[in-house]
Each structure stands twice: as structure tokens, then as C-alpha cells.
Image 1 (cartoon, rainbow, N blue to C red):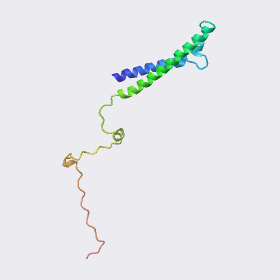
Image 2 (tube, rainbow, N blue to C red; image 1 turned 90 degrees about the vertical axis):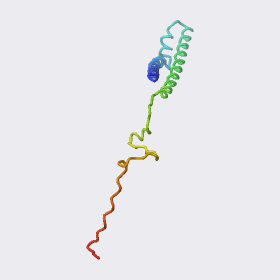
Image 3 (cartoon, helix red, strand yellow; image 1 turned 45 degrees about the vertical axis):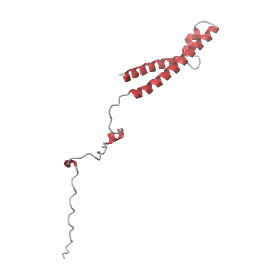
Image 4 (spheres, rainbow, N blue to C red; image 1 turned 30 degrees about the vertical axis):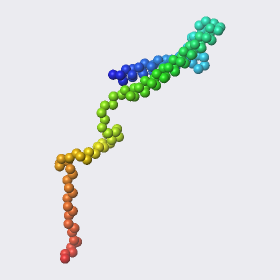
Length: 126
């Protein structure tokens, strides 16, 4: 439940972060230079652009940090359940050895090897 809420928050932050980054512009365009720069004239032009750029820059940093923290938190909230052995052991079919004090039934033990056949003499009778 908590993991699902964290994933939804991460998705919302991703969408907002994309929008905030796309509103910024490195060369004076975008929201900080285009739309906010046209409001007012003279000195008001510079102040509006700077405030918008500062707001977008700070919001990008805050959203990015929050995204990072939520991703790390989501890693610890995953319900892993009981596991027997490692992932490699389960994928290769490796079975863990039985404890030494465990008595195995006789039908699970391997059958003894048959006795070797007597060697034949190649026509030499003594």
C-alpha cells in the first residue's frame, strides 16, 4: 500500500519536473525570457525574468531532490516476501544441502553400485 503511494508520488513529480524543465531556457527564451519578460517595461522587464528564472531553478532543484529521496525510499518499501536461497541458486535449480542431523528415508538414498563382473580370460585356461 505504502509502496503504491510512493510510486504514484514519483510519477506525479516526474510529470511536474518535465514541465518545469521545459519552461526553462538557457538563452533567455522560454517562460523566464519570453512571457514574463514582456510584462511591463524597462527595469520591470529584467526583474520579472530573474524572478521567474530563480523560481524555476529552485523548483527544479527541489523536485529533483524529492524525486531522488522517493526513489530511494521506494527501494526499501518493496515487499520481498520469504526467500529461500539467492536468485542465482533458484534460476539454476541448485538445491541447498540438507542439514547433517536430518535423517533421510531409505528410498531417497542412492542404490549401492553393482559388483564388478569377473574378468574373462581370453581362451587361456589354467
